Image (cartoon, rainbow, N blue to C red; front, side):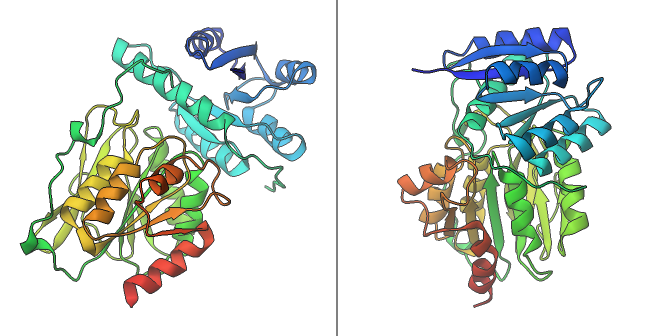
Length: 358
């Protein structure tokens, strides 16, 4: 089996060493080389083109965004942003996604063994997802295997049927799950939503703090209100709630009111937040009052949850392969016959609005 070759670009020697050890520990990955800044990286790429580049955004001589722009407008290579959690790095990381980076993950956390092992899982999985992603030239204007058992949604929320007495309500819920490539897909989807759309709950695999900036960015460009969810927030018409990074989000119901529970817990399907956790809660508390959408992403998180939604009467949609950056999560849902419809990203919003209204 040919290994995925990774070029690590970071000005910190400690980060380069740590990332090298993490990536080399996975039998499917190998470190092709390391570079302290984009100039050294460019020389290495001239000798051998990597399958994936991990890139810091804050570096001397040339920042990561400038280097990324050059890559994406000349010879696109899948780029994974490895970022710290500073406000500046967060903003630059989101800009990097707009410029064509595949995904963002935080730099390895070394303070405890648990944090390090979780970082290891996320980094290796993200590199593999990036290697399988579709990356196109852009015109720009101004997880390691067997590190941790793959837990299911059972670890966070018990499966149960929706009580018959709670089936009927006038409030509707739209649940969305995405991973690699999902930030731009969700932006496109929400920008097409009118202000009278049903309440929306979203899990996008993304690090903590980045979800705050992501929600704020979407709130600025969308007609609807978009915010990072807080525990107890009501699910309201014309509003989208995005699960905060590093926390699971579940839908709950009190009478006719839907609200969200934001909670800690183990990685589920190697993720926190997990799409399966959200979808199971929607199946449990909303059932036929909901529509579920699974978008672009690596792996199978959300596939079983979408099936649970389908089985409790929700209408379910999977993004088609052509419009996905990575056709992993939708493909797995389709394999389970969990999706009532498979459609391109740009057709989803008009279809859903018509579905809810009529």
